[in-house]
Image (cartoon, rainbow, N blue to C red; front, side):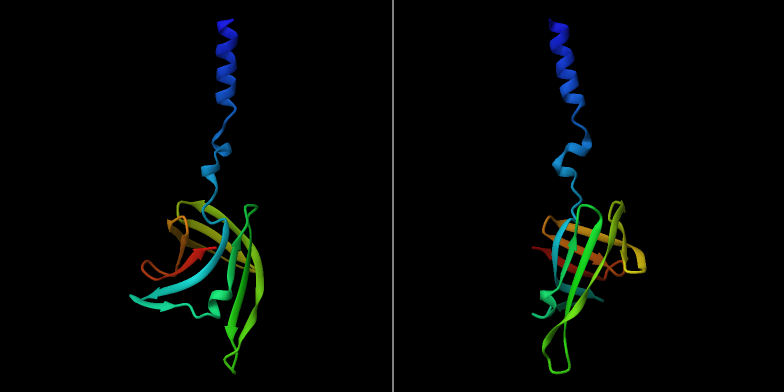
Length: 130
């Protein structure tokens, strides 16, 4: 009887794999809003029009980018939607593909609600999770 109980305990714990842990969800998954850019130690805050844009990263590896911009009359207009894919290659290293363009970039998460996409070692754009 003790052997059967021991076997059930082992089977129960061994059936829970690392993939079952909800903490293993990639931090990039979610909807993100642009808030500012750090360029050569100078901050550029997002305009109300730019804040309408969204990056949406889905768990299946797809992504959606929705942009807005000011036209010649300073009216905020839809700049279009692009779709693509993403893949986490290793710590803070992602491959992003939009239409026919792709690249490997550094993306960090200073906390659960902030994402930084780096253009260089010190310059980045920061996004807030919605």
